[in-house]
Image (cartoon, rainbow, N blue to C red; front, side, top):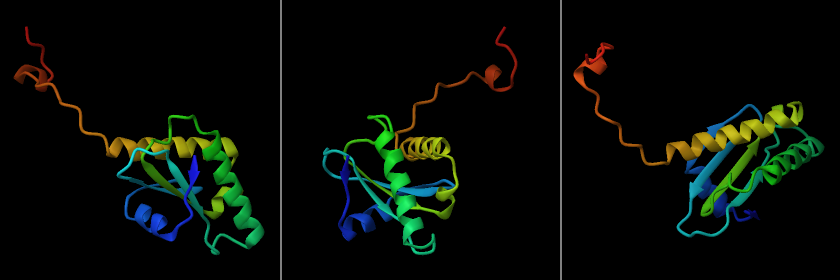
Length: 129
């Protein structure tokens, strides 16, 4: 996992897809290359003083570090914006929220599966006998 550090990268990710949880908001965008995923972390002063903001940032970094290897897709940038709830939320729940947020983001960007046509009898709940 590479870290994002440039403001332009954070702004580009902000224009992409978003998924919210109680502990953070996850922003993602697909880059034009197939390099490793990059992750950025941000916590505003609304969250608390420097000690609290750093604690939230450390917890966010750790849930990303412990995420299974394939969860963050190559060629994507991710930004986690910490919220105050991340201070009190159990770590396992934060990890589950990250997993769910990644599912929502990547599900929205997959091409839709083709649907099988249904017979007229199947649509009405009747059997085709």
